[in-house]
Length: 137
Image 1 (cartoon, helix red, strand yellow):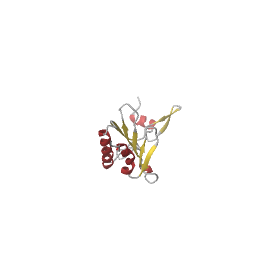
Image 2 (cartoon, one colour):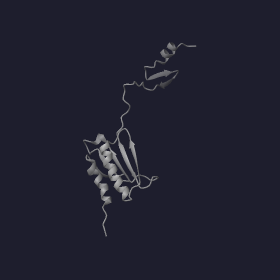
Image 3 (cartoon, helix red, strand yellow):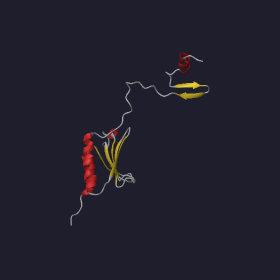
Image 4 (cartoon, one colour):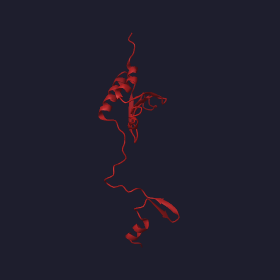
């Protein structure tokens, strides 16, 4: 039997790679309690209130029925569905890296076309509010 010290010395856990009998072994990176987990982009409470206000009006009009929120590493997405099992009708995206270029908010249609992009969420969402305007007979 090998002692614990001999095993730790053989593995050399401080290195990320170690040649293990002819093959390279990759060890997982050491995580300390002081390291931050990978950051995710998310909608702020004020942004969600603006989006959910529009969503409520569209549900009342019978246009939308379901939504989904995805918080990923580079983008936060609010997807809108007519039916749950379908592809989203619209995606409202927040990409903070585009803040200084094209604007961090975008409304994307079902086919992937960018309907509107900008820095102000309310002005970007106006492209969807036009769907609420109908002629009264």
